Image (cartoon, rainbow, N blue to C red; front, side, top):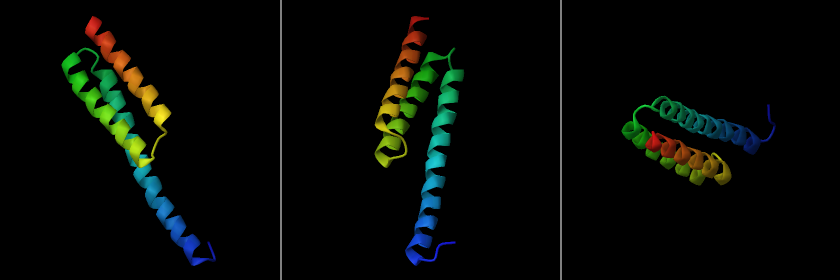
Length: 87
């Protein structure tokens, strides 16, 4: 237990931030899994992919994930959609 009042407040605020960040990461994972399951339906997959890319951009602006990780994953989403188009 911290002795300084500001340290106690910092612990509380960090816990709130962690909960929000975990919620965002969980949502990104869920959408990624949903996209992977929609491999047979290109129209629905495209809609989910657009939503997922927007969520990645928002996560970067909020500081939840680094921009390089988001860029890499968005690139992989684009490759996945391109493979769906070829089929």
